[in-house]
Amino acid sequence: MPVPVLLSTIFITLALVFYSIGVWSERIAGRLKAWHLVFFWLGLVCDTAGTGIMMSIAGGLTFGVHGVTGVTAILLMIVHAIWATVVLIRKDEIAIRNFHKFSVAVWVIWLIPYLSGAVFGMTR
Image (cartoon, rainbow, N blue to C red; front, side, top):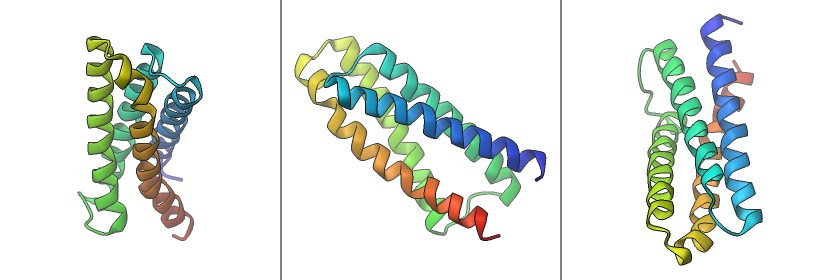
C-alpha cells in the first residue's frame, strides 16, 4: 500500500474513532461537555487531513457520491464543532441537553462517505 494511501486511511480511521467517541459519549451522558468538544475537533482535524491526502492522490475533488458526500460531511462537521463551541461558551442549558440530537445526525451523515470510501477502497 502506498504511503499516502496508508496515511489517509489512518487519519480517516482516527476521525471515525474520535468523532464516534465524542458523539456517542455525549449521547450517553445526555449533555454536551467540553471534553466531547475536544473529540469533535480531533475528528474534524483527522478527517480533513485524511481527505486532503486522498484529494491530492485523486488529483482534486471528485464529483461522485463519495466526493460530494465527503465535502458535505466535512462542512457539517465544521458547523457542528463551531456550534458546540458556541453552545458551551454561552452555557445555554437547553442546547447543552439537546445538542446530541444534532450530533448523532451529523455522525450518521458522516458515515456515508466513510463507508463509501471503505467500499470503494476494497473494490479497487
